[in-house]
Image (cartoon, rainbow, N blue to C red; front, side, top):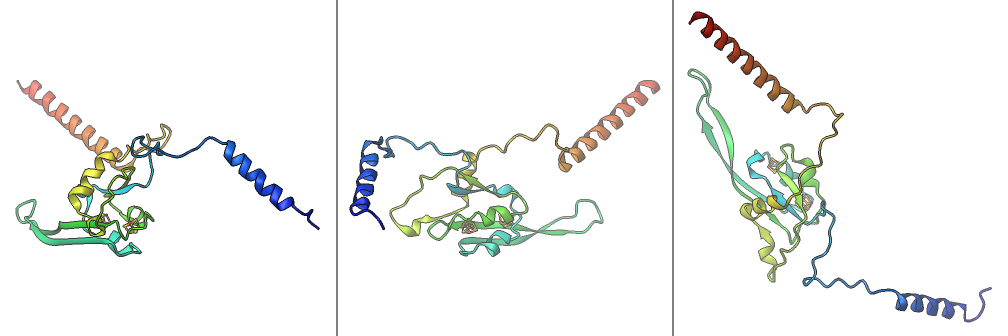
Length: 185
Ligand code: SF4
Ligand code: SF4
């Protein structure tokens, strides 16, 4: 059976402990908070990578990503080749009044076009102004921290390995041509 008055004593002990602790009130906006570099502040769009695949808009649980695009015909790269069509981005906007910062859009983007930025100062006085368009989303890309350095022992990324092999092949071809020209001169 609890001792009468023990609850009150416990409560007073908590009050005393809290009263003697240093205040942790943040003096924002006079003092900027120290945030972790990969804080989920806002979503940046690297629109050069966006292929308008619509995956992010389809997977967003809040349906708050708005994308418009049109198709464009690209002429054949070589004579007799086939024309191709590609999607051109007309509009990319995110309604941050609806966004719940789940990060699903960033996770599912297959082309690395969406990133978390630690930027958080985009409050508005009107909720309708929380829909941000591609220009603003592109600007936030400048605040995205660099990706962590690769593990030196890790396998070379496929894209870099392929680019390096092509460059080596071209250099070897060029060297061979130079040698042949030198011999014939
Ligand atoms: S973070 Fe989540 S809610 Fe916000 S836009 Fe991306 S998928 Fe939608
Ligand atoms: S998933 Fe990525 S590439 Fe596809 S529309 Fe969204 S941002 Fe663009």
